[in-house]
Image (tube, rainbow, N blue to C red; front, side):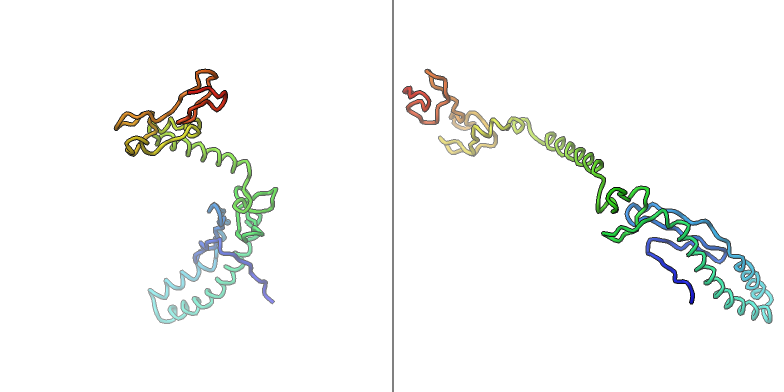
Length: 214
């Protein structure tokens, strides 16, 4: 019984009539390795016979036709053997991930500690560095895109309250203004109790802290 040939789809056959060579690539990063070129001696003989047949015709042409049939069988057998040898030569460079079944290179795409490819189990240090860089870029863009008046909207401004329209003339407010640009109404009430200094609620008649009359 002939030996079974195990194969995957992560390789490219570079073989010609003159020899055999295969290129194996990582399913993730695309990097790979090329097997050593293995000459096919019978290929040169077949080419000579074919050339002779084209020039002289007749018997030599018939001989070339027979040679082509023989070459096809012998070439395929030699090709299969060369492929087996190539897989043995480069198999140590790749490993199959048990989670996604992809064939990946051990050098760059294999997480040795986790026994998975780095797409299924990324290196935490690399991911943390990437996440920090991504976050920094987001903050830079967010800050650069903000207008000067928007940059003033810190947490203390939000806690103080932001109104969308003037309570006096009902004009819509485009920014967090202190006074209405239409009627001049004061929008930020920062009144404080004259006795204890506590901040007074809008419309309050007495201080909520000490009871002093406003």
